[in-house]
Amino acid sequence: MKKLIYLFTIIFLITSCKESTNSNHTEISKNSSKTKKLTNNDLLVSITFSDGPLKGTHNFVKEKGKMISSNTVGYLDETTKNPNQRKSTTLSASALISEDEKLKLQFLTKYFKGKITEGNHEPVYIENSGEEKYCTTFTIKNNGHSFNFNRMFSINKTCNTTEITGFSDWNEGTVMNRRNVSGNFTDTFELEFNDKEGNNIQKVTTEVNVIFTSRQQKMKTTN
Image 1 (cartoon, rainbow, N blue to C red):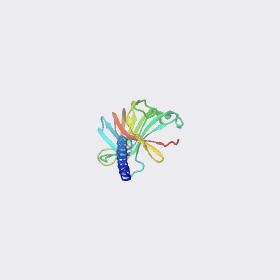
Image 2: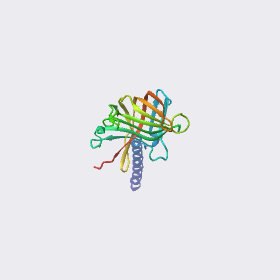
Image 3: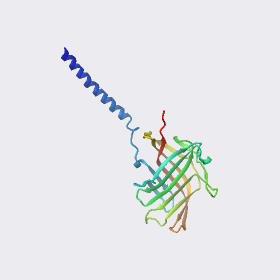
Image 4: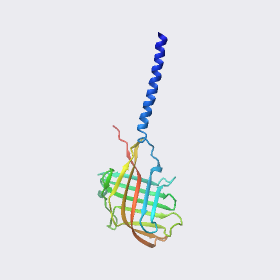
């Protein structure tokens, strides 16, 4: 009798372990997309020019080994120093390199209203020292000898809405939580192309489409 009880106990333990393993496997499978590790390979700024020397699509990614290379989105709350930027979101990319390494996106900034939610967001206008209003600005540098200009500057001609098309689940870190945010916008710009001496060699007014996947991060809160 004792042998039978011992045998049943062993069978029960083995069965329980199998059920526990299957249950854990099911739970991990359900949450696999939620716990996917975020990498810099996920981040991208794709810029398409309708006309001009840069006509076509150029994909910009983080440059390996460059600490200043970044591609982020962040919400600016009511405590932000500049009142025009309060309760708005900023897309900010700097020191990105094109996938073919021919161009560098020195910086890109886009301001739009509200928190990061799916849908269209109205632009936020920022005044520069010349009292001109803009919502987007970006600069591209020739990284080799593929183009006849050294640096390109942009001037807003239109400020359209920014569409947030989606975002990943939050990845929890020790101090910060992170997620990826995707979206796009299309504006018309006057593009100014300068040589190495800073002389303007060409101006082009064209439509520019930007598609982005950028990193948002926020401090972890304690209960």
